[in-house]
Amino acid sequence: MKLICNLSMHSSQPTGLGIYAENCLAGLAERFDLDIIAGGGKLPLGNVLVKAPESAAMYKGKIAAMRRYLWGRSLRFAPDRLVYSPTPHLLPNHPRQIITIHDLLYLHFPSHNPYFHIYHRLLLPSLLKKCCAIFTVSEASRQDIFRSYNYPLEQIFVIPNGVDATSFSPNVSIRANSDPFLLMVGGRYPHKNVEEALDMAQYWKNDYRLVIASCGQGSYRRMLERKVLNLGLTHRVEFKNYLTHDELVRLYQGATALLNVSRIEGFGIPPLEALACGTPVIASDIPALREVLGEAAQFIKLGNPQSWIEAISSLTDASAVNSRLIEGQKLLSKFTWNNAANALEHALLSVEPSLEKSRRSSKNH
Image (tube, rainbow, N blue to C red; front, side, top):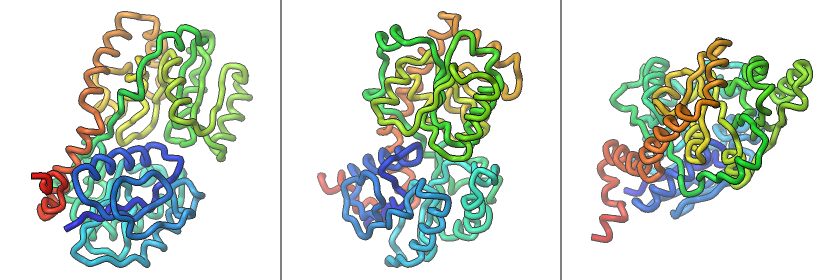
């Protein structure tokens, strides 16, 4: 049996989900012969069965998920074929699937995207009956999926994210020649909680600027711009739109620290990317970030001014910063894309042992 990989949601400008999909499936393609439902982004090695319309890709407007769902209803494959998706988007009429639910952001925060909320609340529970397993990125998300959908815990597998430490690395000269600034990545989404960082500006604005990267142009961006204006922070806050990989790396390398103060996360890739660049991390004290970052970050209790004071002050404690960066290096040896692909391979074979026959390694022996 050959695995069918569903990349119908994939965009040519991938963010967190797209980067996960690209890296996991690249590793998967080294291990298995694949058939692919293609999207608009980078494809792994494999046989393309069909290509999704561009309008169905991620971030193609608020109703892209509905377009993708309706288009997926037209697809038909042999019922014994296993379809794996690195995102939570199923094929409505296929009986044997695995999806990846990174987090339940849209279930818990309906206002973020009403269409995604409807999908997660009304459509996904019935569609999960077509799934022989769910993959997710952390134990925190695994438990949340179990609680929210009552899906069997033993059929939920953790396939973590990774970071390519060869493309994220320190550059001392860039930081030395930069004015001190704090960096937030992924600021187009309300759950990233940029507004709290602005509300707590009195604790950082005298020493640092704030750069908010990949912020997009939507209603959340406009709300943040109004807040910046009302708080008198126009000259202390800079918004940036979608960044190339190299532009993002340079920001990590120049930042005094990364702020990742999200209300919810399934995993949290930016903190690991920052640590790979030798940049300290200040993170919200939520289950997934605690699980992933351990002793490698300074944690903030959201809404707690004293916690913010202590976190910002900790950036001047060279010994504490260095200790956390050392812990960060240990994490980077654990969270690699090769390890993620190994976990993905093991989970797939646990769910469908007959995939052994399509393993590339088997053919080479």
